[in-house]
Length: 83
Image (cartoon, rainbow, N blue to C red; front, side, top):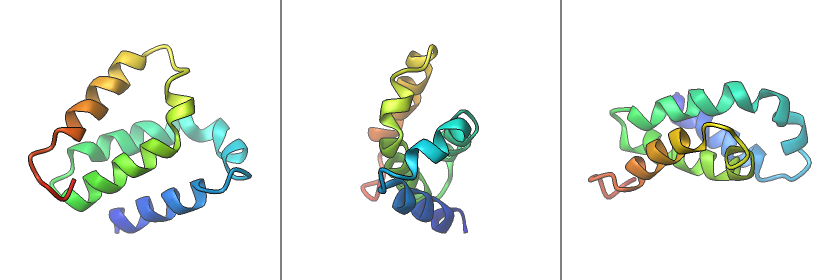
């Protein structure tokens, strides 16, 4: 179920018209997606990375950028090849 929700979020985020509508909620959405980087499911972790890539412009503008980068980079070196 989490993977499906992440896939839907990634798909709707592909539209440039939706990002301004999501912007006020990204401070809540991004931490929830970041938490899924620790999922036991490699598909959920992979989908989380995909979603976070859609919000990269917003992420780089945050004050705690190092926190985001550390968690994202650690997920990118995942031992599972599905991630």
